[in-house]
Image (cartoon, rainbow, N blue to C red; front, side, top):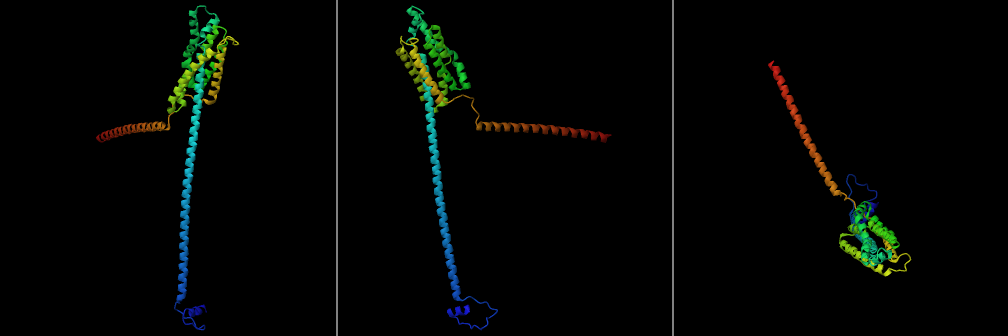
Amino acid sequence: LLEAQHGASCGRPRRPLDAAPQRGRSRAAPPCWRSMRAGTHGAQRGRRVHQETATRAEHAADADSGQLAGSSYHHNLEAKDVEQQQTIDRNARRSTQLALAALLLALFANAFAMANPFPYAPFLVISYGLTDDSRAVGFYAGFVLSSFMVGRGLSSFHLGLLSDKHGRKAVIQLGLVSCVVFQLAFGVSPTFGLSLTARFLMGFFNAIVGVAKAMLPEMCPPDQQAAAMSAIAGMWGAGQIAGPAAGGLLWSESAPVTPWFWPNLLGVAIALAGIAAVHVYLPESKSSPPKKTEELLSVEMASARENADAANTRGGDSDGGSGADCNRSNQGGGGDDDGGGDGG
């Protein structure tokens, strides 16, 4: 029925309904059906091409956005790494500056303690009543002033070895403690012998200058070592100026114990401040033998392996030679026996 109706619509003669279909011959689709199928397939292909094009465009857009996001992500990571490195550098620079300031304060306290008796040493000798001769006053005053350096000269080498073994910071703190204890003892000493002993012991336990110069390259980067060494020399000179100035200004006959009590008490306060600064800001620095790097260890291991291989090769050659000699000797002996047998 459908074929008859469509045939009529396409201009073909309508087949009667009661007519039997022709057998043995394939029936081709009407032209209108072929045109409809062709249009349908064309539209489907068009939709597929459009969908594929849209999908490719979406993938390309996703890839571009992913690349942009990845590049921005890596850029942010690089920026964060740079910022963190800058923060680390600033903190390290600040720590080095604080440690250098603590070391300079320790040097200033040491120089102050050594130099503050310079202006009143003759009056100290006179107050002890050692002599009435004005020419002998300088003789006794020289003992008081030089006893510090005598003690320091006797112990500098051993304190340097102690700093190599137990650390620089401990030796610097020991020197500052000696400035506190023995400077106070010198400020209240009632006799010449006690004052001489106090000055000697203060120098004997004091190696701040040598240890500070040894610690400087371990603490400061190479580009700052020259400036730091100049600061050390300058701070020592400042202590050599401030110590005699304070000793001359603070000498007082109305002092509670001795006339030279106040300048030594000021030196004790400066040494205590140095102890606190060194304890808080100065890092522990201890010299040790240089450690072998990984490259040096790898080179040594490679050379050791080569030496072992060469030794094994020489041993194998010697074993092979001895074995060949043994074989030749055995063959020679066998030939002689055979010859003897044949002759018999």
